[in-house]
Length: 106
Image (cartoon, rainbow, N blue to C red; front, top):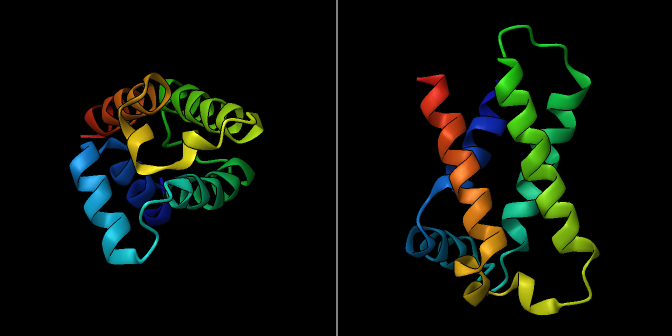
């Protein structure tokens, strides 16, 4: 996986407090869409590459993260994109998947 994608996955795998700190440092706080935007950029690049080094399960997990973030984007619920949402079910699921990707890559 490329560096941009790994950086994005690490951000998605971070604890909610670490994610809030990142948003504050980046000037995006309290809006969480920064994580989705960074992932989207990296994922789009990844999807155009044919990296045989990426395990099939990692590819499936990246697709799952993408699907969850797309569902959040397609929702009319704007609260999905504020810092309080980092503890909701969707963001918790994204975090779990991202952690499992990192564990597999070690």
